Image 1 (tube, one colour):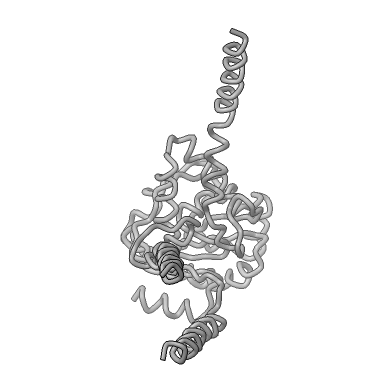
Image 2: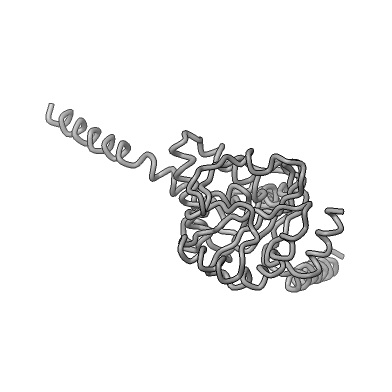
Amino acid sequence: MKNKLLPIFITFIFIIIFIFFYSGLKNTNIYTPEIKINNKIPSFKGDLIYSDETINSSNIFKSDKFYLLNIWSSWCVPCRKEHALLMKLKEIKKIEVVGINYKDKKINAENFLTELGNPYEKIIFDQEGVISIEWGAYGVPESFLIKDEIIIKRYIGPLDKKLIEEMKLIIK
Amino acid sequence: MKIFKLFFIIYLISSFNHLEASNDDIKSKITKNLRCLVCQGQSVYDSDSEFAISMKVLVDKKLAEGFSEIQIYDFFKERYGEWILYDPELNKNTYILWLLPLLIFFIGGAIIMKSFIIKKN
């Protein structure tokens, strides 16, 4: 009796293991970050790009407007694509676009803006990338929609028309 | 007496080593335990990506501000989630991970014990 049960038991275990690993094959192993929203914005200090003054984060997001914090860089190709959409967003009164310039050279950033236009109300210069990490960012481009000092939406990667429409709906 | 002197010298040398190491040691220990989120399968310590470089700078800054190792882990965990740590904590998502090796160890031990006892009998 015992000898008969053993092969059945072993094949059963192997089948379970096979199913387990086979389904595992199909799972992607690329980590997609859990998007944390409804968090309070981090507090930080940063230099502004045009005026050379140091600003505290609590002074940037203080009015009851919506804010879009956009992390960008002149060397980032998707940022270039996204830029036209940000320029359109600038025309909407209810929202203010704030930029974080990520690991860039000042001169390149300024050339980028003179070439494509400046949608940003303020630009914080983040040469070491440290402020972006305070925000929990992964890289460029990345955007945060903020209202009343709370992150209500987060966009990893470039914005597109669909996302902008979605944003407009939220603002209304 | 000579032996005492020798021991004393060895003691001095080893204590100097400890003095030398402190801050850098902690930094590399922390960065080795942080996952570089934009690379695959690399720690922040190993990676030279933009993200990892920024992380290293931030770890340096936090250490200079007097953050402890655990405070730094908490800081990153708050922003990036548990995934950023290579050393997962014991919670409801990870208990299988922690308990399975123990379980296998005990079951294996039990099987061996049993087969010995059967042989003896």
